[in-house]
Length: 349
Ligand SMILES: O=C(O)c1ccc[n+]([C@@H]2O[C@H](COP(=O)([O-])O)[C@@H](O)[C@H]2O)c1
Ligand SMILES: Cc1cc2nc[nH]c2cc1C
Image 1 (cartoon, rainbow, N blue to C red):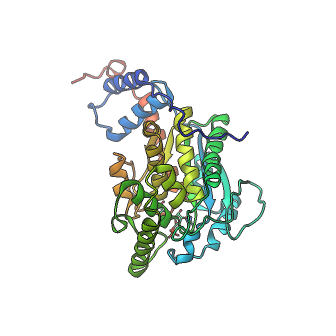
Image 2: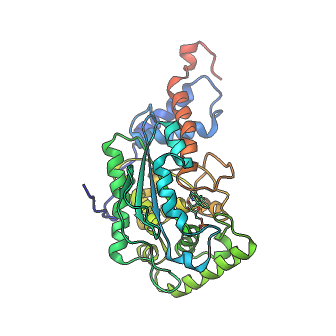
Image 3: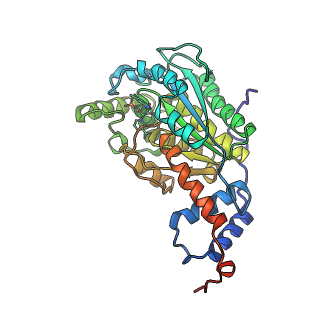
């Protein structure tokens, strides 16, 4: 199975009748209307995505895409590039944050190795889908060739196909890649016509001088690729393998009707690229948390997204999204399990 993603294929339709039925049910439950706030909206949104007035969220799937970035050569991260490959092993051996979260949630963790300079080799529990050891440094070259971009999009679509085959009700896409906040910043700036100063942040922990250097690097990259004005070309020139895989997963999720719970700054940039490629993708996205990374709030505003959590997290790996799953499960449990005014003999307003 190796699905080739057609980014132009239409997205699935949201079930508006199931949404309306869920909204009507919320109005009958023993609480002042709207008093469960965004938990009500979450249950109604999931109803539309799952095509049932009573959504459930037992089976969550997490794919973490790992890849290295040529732009790391510009000294834009607080950590060495070797960490990407080292973390691939840690994801599989169970010691990473997302490994713990996946275990705790009973979620499948799909670790997808797309290429690292420090390649740990075959590891049990890691799917090798190596595209290249790294993207090119986009200060001088396009990050990816067209074939590499398609391979990365396909890797995301393949994970969605595996998730669907396993009966997943929700897809979480996580990422790991030293330097990828620089790639995400550059891509988001290109997609939005925004200034690097508005979006660049500390990533893994740059100091103020480091952030200034990162802004300069993104400025150079944007000038170098000023001719890339279509979203697919912007993704190819300025993205990364894991960012393109995440965009591919968003598109494949939307096309096949699998809800995608979006993580932090990098995952949201990928989701933004997916929406630029295919606007119907937006209907299938749920937003989990507001990352501490500087540009995330801007991207969330553009996508008109109000994530459920704001915990100051900035890890990536899909960790913010995974942390939100218990809340979504509670939203479904409340929606299905509360008594109506009539059942409980409680007077309605
Ligand atoms: O998800 C986020 O919002 C987030 C914010 C800052 C950093 N990260 C993670 O940190 C790594 C990239 O940071 P950097 O400084 O190397 O560009 C990458 O592996 C991401 O998963 C993730
Ligand atoms: C240790 C480490 C773990 C990570 N997980 C996601 N990004 C990361 C970056 C670092 C540096």
